Length: 258
Image 1: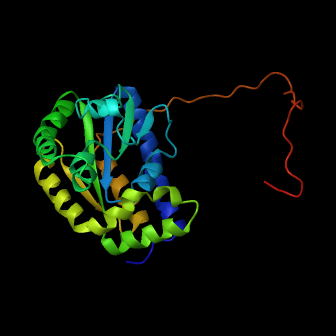
Image 2: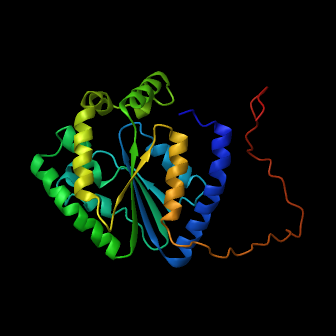
Image 3: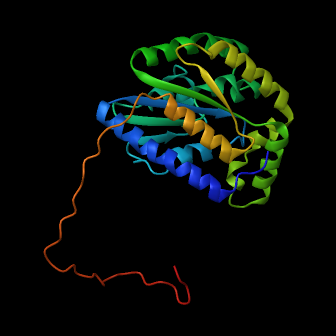
C-alpha cells in the first residue's frame, strides 16, 4: 500500500476533526461520558491516533490517560481500581493509551501476572465493562493492528531518532522476541472480551495515517447524532486603545526569525 502523503492526510483529517469538535460539544451539552481504549502492539500508533483525535479538543474535557508501572500500593489494590479513578464524569471524554487490558497482554507475556490472575481477568472483564455500559458510559475498544515487519521498521526508526528514543523501552526490546506469544495472548483476550455490549474493533495500522482516518471515521459513526447548535460569541470593541506592555518582554534572539 502506498504511503498517504501528509498534505492529503491533513486535508482528509480536517473535516473529521471538525466533527470531533461537534462531538465534544454534544458530550458537554448532554452530559454524556465516553471512554475510548487504544490497544495494540508496541509502535502500532496509539499515541498518534490519540493526538489526531484530541488535538483540537479542550484538554479539560478530553483527557488522555497513559498510566505507568503500578506502585507497590496499586499492586495491592483491586486490579481495576487505578483505572476507575480516571473514568469520565458527565460531559467528559477519556482516551486510554493502553488500559486495563495490560493484564491480558504485556503482564501475561512478560510474566508480571500469574496464569490465575490472567484467567480471572478474562472472566471478570466482560462483567466490569457491562457495569460501565449499563451505567451509561459509551465504551469503545480499538485494537491497532501492525505486522512484525512494520513493527521492526518503526523500532529501528525510534532507535535512530533522538526525538523518538523515549518511545523505545527495555520491555519493547524483549517483546521483539515474543511476537508470537503476544499474538496468542491477543487472540485469547479477543475471544474472552469481545462482547455484544463492549465489542472490539480491529483497525489496520500498518499505514498509520490511513489507520487514523479509518479509526476516527468509525468512532464518529458509533456515537449518536451529535448536532448541537453552537452559541454565537460576539467580541465587542474594547472602547479604548490597548496598551503595549514593554516591561520584561523577552526579545527574539539576534538573526532568528519566528
